Image 1 (cartoon, each protein chain N blue to C red):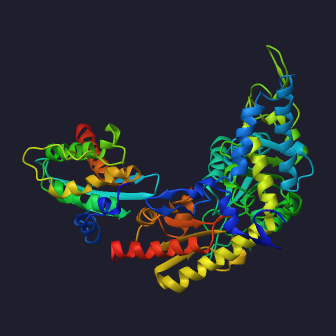
Image 2 (image 1 turned 180 degrees about the vertical axis):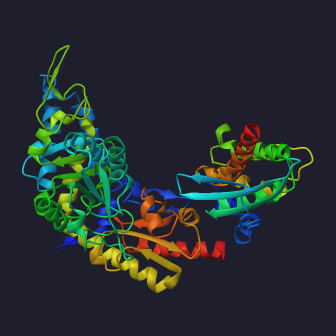
Image 3 (image 1 turned 90 degrees about the vertical axis):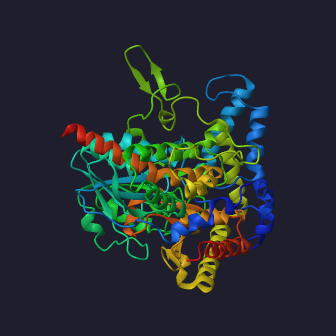
Length: 418
Length: 166
């Protein structure tokens, strides 16, 4: 039986917690209750050890040296490409491009595919719930190339409104949609959108930054053409992300950044690009970070992504019912009411207390939540709020963490007496 | 570690619950200036009526924000109403100096040195504003406290630029 899995599909959270050294930390006598994994997750010992071990025993630049440790470093780095491909159901490592993060992965597509293949007058279809990372690159492309941006609306419960999808797809060259909203938690029907998009002749990019860390991902089942995500939200280190793309699309796309590694030949008057995926990896890549990502994938795979998803669904259901039962109408939760339709992200407001003040009071008892606009200002405006509080769950959270959150709300109400 | 009582003092909570000079003024003649905190989405809208002698005849605050930004704005309006532009600018300078104490360093416990206070401004009663000094122990909240003060400075600057252009 894999460590951290008690029986069948159920995570043994008490054991999982022991894998994360930071959770031993005390803050002013309080245990650390980390409820901000949607922003960035904590790291298990296995990931920290893998990166330390790499630096202590193996480090050399990749794809250059012929000596032993350089070959070992190259093999380890390229091995993670294969791990990533298997983790997301991709047919081959050749479609896996390492980037700095999901944001850079989306910028790569906007820059390289957008400038190469989206003629002025073509449209890009987005949604009203996109993170700024999947909005600003397209706003930039609109300014530069004159492409039209369209947006699938969201309803009052945080679901995409798809009634008009086929008409909105007319003249669209690319659809860019989040698999899961970082604010509402909504799990979007990506496969349905992708099928309609392909029928209309558009390619599909999925911002999977919030979904890959929390559930089984299969790019073939999703039917997407590009998939972007970050390692740091899935137990891995900062500084590395992934763009997966269909090989024929990546091959046809011009290079992104220029430099070493991404070339086959260089003369003083011309250059020839390398093969994919290296064509998109200019300069020395984040090698230790790739090793860390590989260890994170191994860790999550041992837990089992089905077990991870079930744990978070159950904990989210518990959180929603706790907030409703104990705090009633004082709490306004955003997003779908059914935990089956959402991931482990709960955005809310509490009475008239500003989310910053809530977060400050919670911090005084060791509880970390996010407060603000969550890099989704258009969505905040859609729901008529300037900011929300957000608790987000991962493999190391349990019902005691939800209780600490709920207790913190009561403490805030006492201070502000509103 | 700084405690919540350093931040949420009773005077601050009083201004938060019962903000002074809340509302709008007809604009024009009042100057309307918006300030944003891009980190948290807080926004303050100031309406400043400056009379011909350069005095702040009236001032109102609209917008939304946390208890620190709202109470600081409320205290700011109470402090500058009836003051000349020069006096108000002195207050802005003094307040921002108090808020920038973190740049001069906190001690190992994250506490500001005990002798920190608003620099003296001749003839001005700074009493209530001192309550905001605890904010410097919570560096991410300093921008909340200074938002309305920066916006007021902007109102004076724009008024000055407008006068120069007239």
